[in-house]
Structure formats: structure tokens, C-alpha cells
Amino acid sequence: MLVTHRYGYQTWLGGQVIKVMIGTWAPSFYTMENTLPLSAHLETNDLICFVLFWTLSLPILAIRPERYRIPAVLSSVAVTVGVLALMIWALAKQGGGGPLLLDVSKTLGKPRLKGAALGWAMVKSVSSGIGGWAGCVALALCAALLAPH
Image (cartoon, rainbow, N blue to C red; front, side):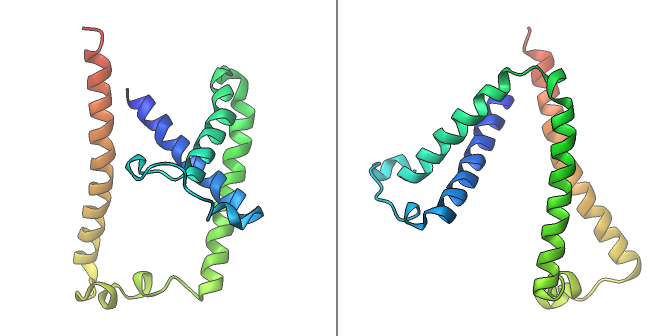
């Protein structure tokens, strides 16, 4: 069940990427007439891109994992380089990380943390992030263990 949810979510995000790509080539795609009812909570261009991405990505699921190890490694390297290049470009374009990274006290209205208080705040943040993922993993493992019974 978790895999189905994840595939649906990733297909939706992939459809949004397709929508941006088509929108850069044909800007009128963003403003095309919505033929779906409001109760669908979805616009026609979103549905077109969702189905398009789903159609393109579904055959990839038929490939055995052993066969796409090299493409997976190459794509992970390309994505890492691309993300780092995008981050460097954005930081250079904006002239730095801005007030959220330089001085959080201006953004949050709280005093700047130093020393042990800063360290414990970082530990709390990391623990909160790991706790969310750990809870999800534990739930998935419990579901996998209990499913056969």
C-alpha cells in the first residue's frame, strides 16, 4: 500500500515537472481552458501531464532492477551535480543565503543562539527529522510483518 501511495505521489510530481516543461515551450498551456468540474480539484492541463508522465514512466517498472544499476548510478551523479550547480547559481544570484541563514533572529524574532544552546537546538532539529522518518520506517516494517497473518 505504501508503495502505491509513493508511486502516485511521485507520478503527480513528475506530471508537474512535465507541466513546467510544456509551459516553457508553449506558455498558453498554463492558461488552457479547464474542462473538468471544480469538484475534481484538478485542472485539465494537470491531468494531461499526469497521464503523460504515467504513460512514460510505467514501462520502466517492467525493467528488472539488476538491469538498470548503471543508469541509476549515472543519473544519481548527474542529479547531484545538477542540484549543486543550481544551489551555487541561486546563492550567487541572490548574493548569499539571506536572513534565514545569516541571522535567524531577524526572521523568527527570537534571540540568536550561541554555544551549547545552538548545539542543543541543532540536536533537537536533527532528532525531529530522523524521528519522522524512523516512525514511517517502523510503521512500514510492522505492516510488512503483520500483512501475511
